[in-house]
Image (tube, rainbow, N blue to C red):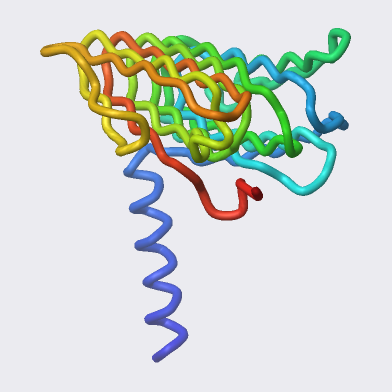
Length: 206
């Protein structure tokens, strides 16, 4: 009897997954990349999360949700090194599914990220230059001993985080300040909120 119930449950679960019409895929790639270098990240329509790793590698995870396997098959990540700069490009179809990108970077990596749409979460300390057309942005900037310049703005959204004063603006908001460190943090989104964090777990050491 228990076997029959278990088989029935499996059939129901399989039917629900099929009727849902969603296909999930998780693809991981990695490349060697030294610490204390610059990384450019180019994406189009994806949520992006950047974390710090312990080793000298770029590790990328591509998580897709789509109506068919064709979308996942066409999502590609490529990486190349040009001098002291690594360039990570994630290509995807214009429609047909959702994409989330997680990137783990070596300590001391300076980030340069450009996105057309999607939420961005940066959990590393260091130089950052982040721009997105639409999406919320959450960024770790470190303490005032870490950053030297903070330049943050959104045309339609809020700026939050008790880091360096109150933001200016009515519909859009901006925030500019300087600290005692050397890291430059530049974050701009056309439509979305920007949240600044002083530190994240295991990312900052004085």
